[in-house]
Image (cartoon, rainbow, N blue to C red; front, side):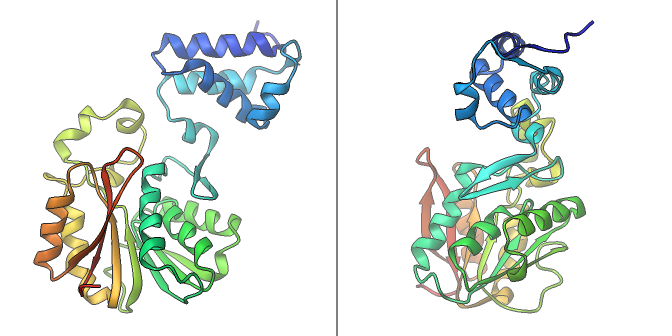
Length: 286
């Protein structure tokens, strides 16, 4: 019979051993993070707890087993930090990555006036993290986020509400910018950019759990860039900017697609690893 309570020390060791046996990197740290979430304690609070204290292990063990199956930590806990926000996630959404913050850094560099009433569009919004992060920085701006996956849009709506930004945004279901007729000052997009042939070689956390529609960029990874760049001339205001996230070593391909659609590269932003992660485009040379 499973114990009703165990000591915290035993639970930490159990979690570490479970994760280590399945090849999870930093198994002790991950065990602590999972226990912290299951017990609804901050990491600081957990580390300060007496290791002899008795706790209910049931939810923690469920978390250990899910992580041992290589389910991403964010899907287990249901949230992921991004910029200054705690973002809700689900299996319908891509998990926000720190590398994607390069898009927000790009926007802040190119548009330093924070009180401007920009109209912002986020194509393939997923959790809404990019749009929400931008709206926290530009307090007079209004945003629209579009995603083709209805369940993703539901998560984005929740994130907008919990971020207290619902009055300045709208999330809708749609295919890129097909249903739009207005023009925008800023367009974000973190589209699928992985080559179809490379999908089977992804980490199991990504390959088996994250939505394929948010990963598969077609034969050369460029399908979405071609589609969005073709729409951008109709969606961007004069001197507006389109900010893409791109994959490693994809900058030249994306730039060629942009230039063929009359767009100019106005900024390149590196991620935390020094790779070009964001490219900003405009219909005019800023």
